[in-house]
Length: 116
Image (cartoon, one colour):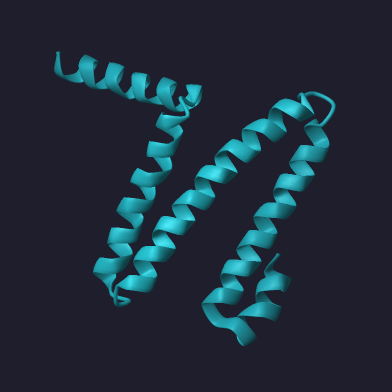
């Protein structure tokens, strides 16, 4: 994957690095998916993928709107991160994602152990 970065970064700078990273992650996903395709249910994994992908698109939209409407400063970046995380997990909570609820319950259980 360093080859892709070596080709893209000189022409596209940080955007080239981002594209290279996405290509690398997609390649790893496809290889891993190909290895486990006979073990897992393809319909279930596709359903799960689109659920999280949709939440990611919503988060992208909120972060993009913030970036368009505010000056590019470190404060804007921090605001995009905070609102992006909140929007992503809010959607997961709204659609009652079991994994998200399980993680939240686990966190509260650990907090309870530490303080009570």
